[in-house]
Length: 324
Ligand SMILES: [Zn+2]
Image (cartoon, rainbow, N blue to C red):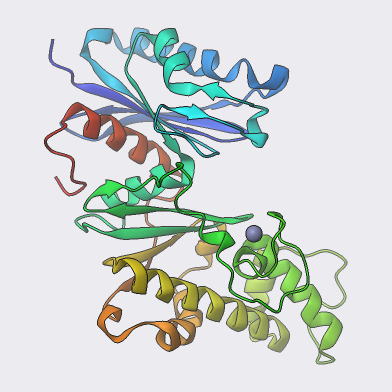
């Protein structure tokens, strides 16, 4: 039977997004189920399997017509599809590939969630048609993925794309969540922006509308900077100068066609690219200057697109490029 369908799954700590795709057209339908992290996450994969089964029954699709399931998980995944620790899900060592495959009877392909988001953007998003691109996801932390020659680069241990833990300030005294000091996400992630704003308020006497607030979010800092709040603007410009320099260093190493910004912070829009520019210009090697910095375009759907692209890649071993 012709394998006309596939599933892209983006597993997060609170919800799991699923997409049913047709291999010859595009996304047919997307939906979400809650992620049940009780019992050390023991119900997560059975719940996903049940959601897949229900959808197939609902649409009258036979399993023989399904090419497979591509799933992104929030942790490092080894070449056998095994996750070795996933704090958000309560998982220790879980063989996602084998378990989900035996629950559904379908081939399963697994990768890190930020990596499949990169693959999704490279396939149908801002990186469509590019053979090499990087996605930097600016959320609570900073993650991302690397697509080279149209394929996902997972790295030796499946841990590629940990852009947030590139050291950008050797003089930093505060600790990053990873235990090191001076990591990029201490400055340019949502939590990093809030941290930097707090420090700025302590050492800078100029007025700021955030001074009277006990708590504020990264969005508050960004909005204040957009409105010309001098302190918030100082924070945004210095944090994004570091991000720009980090992006330039990645370009110098890999020479991709574009560095694409995704995640919650990227919703602030084009102005972020302007704030990044000075750092990028300062650090980029002349031969890598033509690399573009763009905003991601698939939003929360990047992961399910990337999951489906994983399925297509493994189904067509001879045709593995993103721009097909
Ligand atoms: Zn770190």
